[in-house]
Length: 121
Image 1 (cartoon, rainbow, N blue to C red):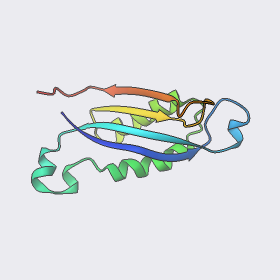
Image 2 (cartoon, one colour):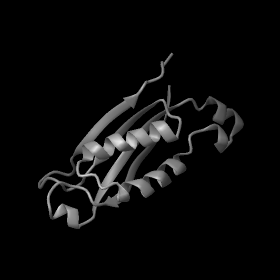
Image 3 (cartoon, helix red, strand yellow):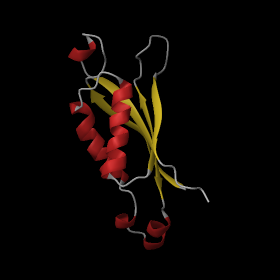
Image 4 (cartoon, rainbow, N blue to C red):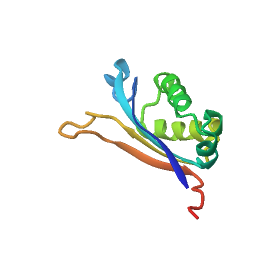
């Protein structure tokens, strides 16, 4: 299995459960690891034969600020659904990080895996 990754995608959104959080924008940082078979793209050197990670980033930049999610868990699940359903990816690992959410910590968040991980053989 090959993995195409997109790490450190920073997007501002209203996210959180507290009243004060619903009145401000906070930055979430998204890391994606997406299963792909890159052999065809490597041979053709053509974007049409691979996962367009710029397209994934553009879609998430449009979705996340409008999502209205309160929990990072919900946001991660919805992001996984978008990647799996709209980009023909069989498996995805999604990390959603909310930097500064806990005083004294660098970041806090969730990591989920969805879909079927292709055989590595």
